[in-house]
Image 1 (tube, one colour):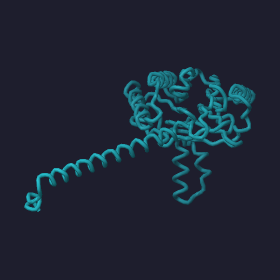
Image 2 (cartoon, rainbow, N blue to C red):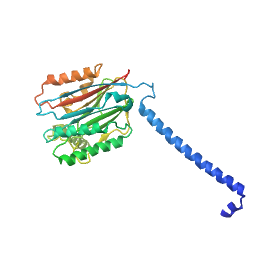
Image 3 (tube, rainbow, N blue to C red):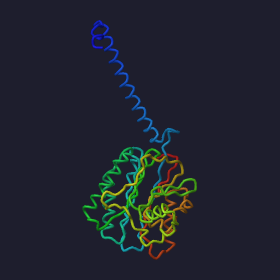
Image 4 (cartoon, helix red, strand yellow):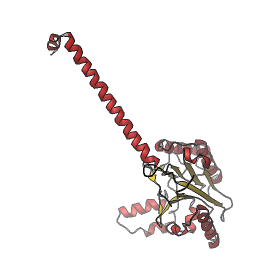
Amino acid sequence: MFDQWEALSTELRTAIVAALALLAVSLFLAVWVGYNWVKRKKMTRASGRKDNGELLSAEIAYFHEKGKRDKQEDSFYISPVDEYDKNGLVVCVSDGMGGMRFGDEISHDIVNEIKGMWPLSFFGNEKTADDIRKISNMICSKYDFQGGATLAMIHIYNNYMNIYSVGDSDIILIRDGQSTILNPRQNYVSYLVKKLVREGKETQDAYINSKSRALVDFMGNKDPRVIYTTEAMKLTDGDVIIVSSDGLTDAIPWNTLAKYNHSGARKIAYTIKQTIKSKKIPKQDNYTAIMVRMSRGVV
């Protein structure tokens, strides 16, 4: 074959080399254009502006109440609302583990670390989850398993939402008259239910087990499993997202929260808070919740 190549005229060989080079460049450009087209498609889909170009507004309200505990061990963070259009919205709740030392300090440390991460990249889900894991490892090193806390966090950007969770604090979506918990609780009851299902047994025993509320993962554990979305969830007009400590859902069953979906986040927060207070539960846990209501209108 080499002899055949040598037999070709210099002009023909030059033309062939030029054609091959042009083909290589064309292939490179095709791959590059294709890659950027896919990337733009993903960005457009995550931007939420494909349908009508309208950015949903986010109305925010919260309550932060001390129950019958000796001290308030819940902490929370809401990112700057004036940066909503540019960087989106991050809210989180951290609930210090009761009965252990330093629960209040640890929950406070967690939200301060999240605050220090702002602004977060909406498209860096895996990195954000890894950063949360690093926060837990830092706490583990600092407090040496003498305390822990939960973390429930959402990041809303251009009508889409990512969630992050460690422990048993809740992220609840109210849509079309129904309530849905978006993050599975990392407690012993969840483990027991899965175990009993695999064994073909009834699951009610899981809920009366004395260890059912014990956490199997938490912030302050070494390399905890961070639950997070790999594909952002699209939000729609009228959606309400509640990020809360379990003091709320201990008092009001999560599947009944849709009935509190009034016209505004402030009304929702006020009604839920007053309902919990009116129950006068003797061992009421601290209860913290942030309500975010999505709606059409000017941000």
